[in-house]
Image 1 (cartoon, rainbow, N blue to C red):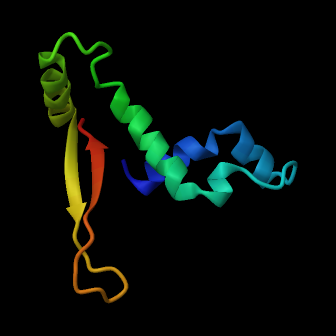
Image 2: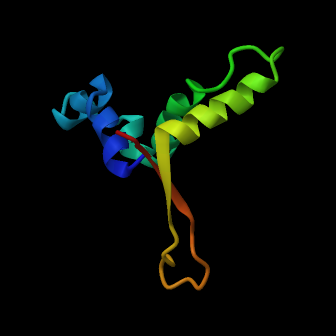
Image 3: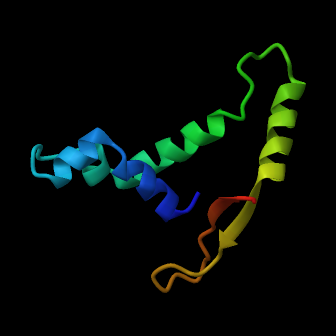
Length: 95
């Protein structure tokens, strides 16, 4: 998912809208954006994971569905002048 995808989900949050309107002081989206973004991406990913552990091949099938539905890009630009590149995967829905 891109940052824009995550922010579109954030923007639909009741707590975020109340925070932006000045009705509440804080929300996890304002104080811990990266953690909320991880949670958002994981929740989207979990829809592809098998619900029960008794079928081992369902995980492989879920991974194949993800590969078929999404393209993945890696941003390998060095961050803050650091010589090591930081991988930033993003997934984009095909079609």
